[in-house]
Every structure is written in structure tokens, then in C-alpha cells.
Length: 288
Ligand code: ATP
Ligand code: MG
Image (cartoon, rainbow, N blue to C red; front, side, top):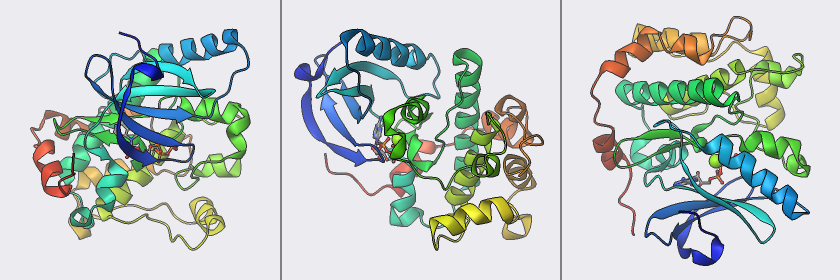
């Protein structure tokens, strides 16, 4: 059912992002929801209704690879999105937990790639949009082993709004987005961002030297793209998959639906992987 802020019971703070906080609440039906407050303002009831309608339509997804929206409402003048609670947190949280600082198993990377490629494909094919903010923070995991994309269409709304002065992280921007040489960059920019995300997850370190934001952006445009090497024990499939994602020329970079038939994706799609067991071993037990 639908609900508003007054019907929610606060549980705890889940995290802080570029634009605000995400808090855990219990809904009237007893379900846990992660509520994100987004600084999108609307002056009139009509504008608010329109914005809610847009967000609900975009998030009315029927995909197991996209975080579901449970409700949307305005509170304190800000748009609030009540999302399905993903109790494993984000892949950023996983990266931060000490035991995961080493390499991530290729089977887990495989399952992440399967989920994200399907999620991106669904968003584009069913909703006609790209994600625009792919990074470890926006890929969420749950103890049942599910892996899902979060924050669908939020980046675009924020870019279009007055909040755009409050820029998010630029480290996952594709070279063409930094150069600004394509009027409308396309979904292959999401594929690039996912490639950088995967290398970071695989190795435990962001693949460019982070001396300053300028140097990172300069390196993305002017240095060879990062990658994984078979000599370091990675399979041919994952090395080839990431080389495709991190093709610097956007015209040569594959789209998510093309990557769905890549050997790396086909291999891990067919495999049984105990994602929830891995998550248990990786994340320190959280107090509840
Ligand atoms: P951005 O503003 O660019 O999306 P971000 O992803 O770091 O940046 P938020 O989306 O605000 O910031 O999320 C902050 C943190 O809250 C996440 O890293 C994650 O740990 C937690 N979080 C967000 N959504 C959920 C959810 N649905 N279930 C569980 N935890 C969540
Ligand atoms: Mg996010």
C-alpha cells in the first residue's frame, strides 16, 4: 500500500550520499524500507504530483536486478523515495570491510556483472533511460544473494534541477563525458562506469591514481584504459569483458544487450554461486 512520512517508524541511519541521507524505517505493513531524501523541490501541488508520477513510473520495474520502489512522497519539501531495503548494503560498503580488501572472487564479479547488465538492459529497453550514476555505491546486495542497481533516474533529475551545482563523483565518468565531445552521451558511458567499478571491486583499489580530481579526469582521457591481466590469475573471459567495457572510443564500446551474450556473462549466468555465503564471510556482523 502507499504511505507517507507520518506512518513510518525510524530505525537507524543507513548511509550518507552526495545529496543527503538514507534512513531505515519500518512501514505500516511492517516491512523495512530504506528512505532516501532527494533535494528535488517543487513549488506547487501539481508539480509535486508530476514529479511523483515520473519517479513512480520509472521505478515501477518488474526486474529482479533493480531495487524496487515501495513509495514516494514529499516531506520537508524534499522528494522522499522509500526503497526496498537491501540488508547487505552497497558494494562500496563491501569494499570498505577489511576482509574484502583483497581480490574479489571471479564468481562474485561474474554474478555482479550478470545483474548489472540485465538491470541496465531492462532500464533501457523497458523505460528508455540509461542509469548515469553507475558506481560501487549504487549496486546493492542482500543476504538472500540478490544484487541490484539502485538510484534509477535520480542522476538525470538532479542534473536537470537546480541541484546540479552539487556535482556527484566524477571518477566513473567515461572519457567522452569528460571531453564533452558527444552532445548526448549514451548508454555506453554506463558500460564504461561499470568497467571501472569492476576493476575496483576485483583489485580492491580504484584503478587511477587519486592525487587530485583533475589528475584522475586527465588520466581517464589521456592514459590507456585500466584492465585485468591473465598473468595475474584472471580468466581470459573477464579480461576480455573488461577490455570491451573500457574501450575508450564510445563508438567501439558494446551496449549492455550486446554484452549479455559475452562468454563471461554466459558463464556466470549459468553457474550456481553462493553469493549470500560470500557476503556473510565478507561483511562483519552488523548490530541490529
Ligand atoms: P549518490 O548520491 O550518487 O547515489 P551514494 O550512492 O553514495 O551516492 P546514497 O544513494 O544516498 O549515496 O546512499 C548512501 C548509502 O546508503 C549507500 O552507500 C548504502 O550503504 C545505503 N543505501 C542506499 N540505499 C539503500 C537501500 N535500498 N538498502 C540499503 N542500504 C541502502
Ligand atoms: Mg546511491
